[in-house]
Image 1 (tube, rainbow, N blue to C red):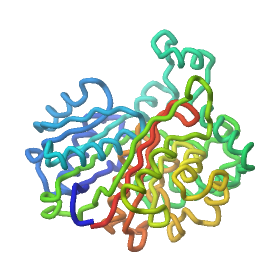
Image 2: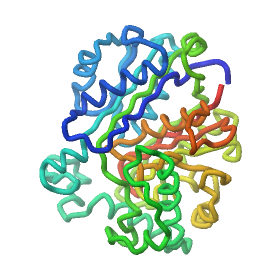
Image 3: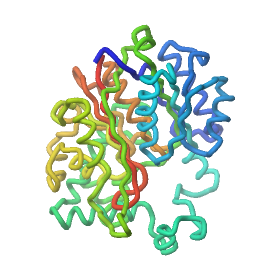
Image 4: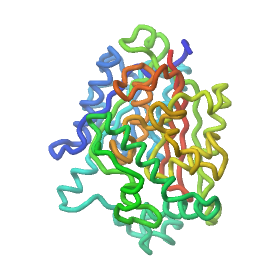
Length: 386
């Protein structure tokens, strides 16, 4: 693992509610901190990536005073930033860039608070969306309901229980308790999850991700830069990206993009699921985690409910997952994939503090964008300790 592109700097912003911030301020502070973490300067950056508005990179480059010669504006939802890391590694191997800065900032929570409301799905004019959306959105289906359909189908097909789904939320909260910056840190039980407010049956409030402000940055660099960096390099071993959809309008509720990306990434890296020491899995909802674990081969289809029980996903368990609390308890500013890589990097460096996985060698990150059971993206990234 001592050759090739590596993650050399990371930073996750500590704030979860920042009414006096803009997304650009989050980006600026995170970029500066990640570069300092790597021992680099803005003048070293020759690659820049983010997702958002069409001209976002122009504004960000000027704000940060960087002059990139390689750009990436891939926008595939919550998995976008893991795709950026894969693309950056390819660009570095092709000598098109040497130091790539990947950034994100969002004020999702404080913007909603300023409007005097809770964060809620954006109202969409049916004339401004695709034909497929025009058949669904006007009738009021929300994102949580899309995931609830997947959960209902999994329960119907395999007998998965509410208690098994709730165990995922309880695990993430237990890990968030060890993260001083997590939005929610108070312990919860399986009974608490089931008793929380119903959102879309069978999903309740504590089955759903939090909404926060936040930002993050990741620096990917060449082997030459990594060898002389301030931190231990975190090597990019392999990765795959894919899109899944309804395939001609027919819902395939349990057919997730991770089925395409997970096995391929393992094959490319010459690894198996049993080689993974920790997993950072996008947990927009509890059902997202369960179906992702099955799709990537950690257990067989239908066995996810049993797999997540008995502390297997806890620190000290067989597959510690979302060690900083995940989207269910730590943060979720809107597109969360960047934070998966940030925590994985801390774990592989060995500087994750009280939530450190002992002797972590291989980390898996998997991001999901869009909604399961329909149009969504998946990106799997395997990282290794140098």
